[in-house]
Length: 229
Image (tube, rainbow, N blue to C red; front, side, top):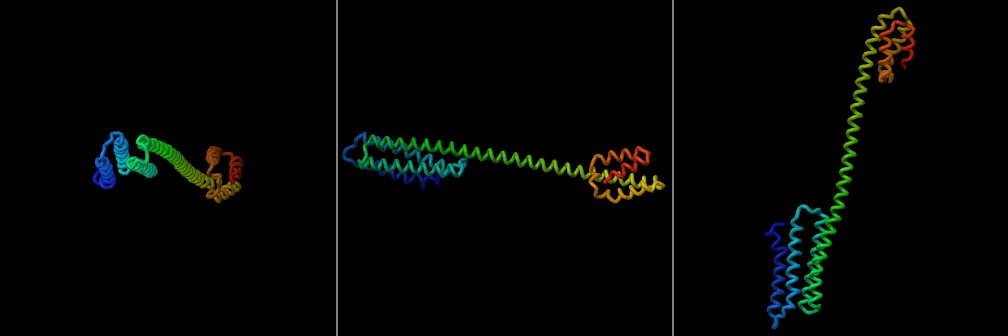
């Protein structure tokens, strides 16, 4: 909060109260220094409390929880100190007790403010830790998805390459082994299932294809082709 905004809201009422308290002392027939101690203490305590209240309201670093709690704590301590000095001025409480209550309100405000700040740091730290853990898990999941997608794409490419290599070989073999009706029948059968058989997604399909390409043993070829499901 800027000074020109905080001045009428916070400081003018406080200065008016200070003026009122000062006028009471000045209008008394006899001025006793001991009676001034609570008022001077109140001047100091109220100044510090209002100054802190101004910083809290105008601050941007605190979270909403800390700001709301701090404003209420400071306002309560300021109210207690104001009631205390009014009771002291009217003679309803002793001077010593008034000074103790005034100083205590300032100390209590400081202690509660520190506890509130500490609690907020713990809560904020826990939330940050959970967010970080969640972000890390999300990143791991995304990376796993990317890797799975890449592996799936790679397997699909290999499957396409395997099927294409088999088609080329089967076309060549159907020409080369025209006289062997059993081989031709197996070639026709394999051509019918090549588009959907999971066999052609495996490494075994490429190993068997290499064997077929390198052998002239027709019985072995028939055996290998019959094994394709």
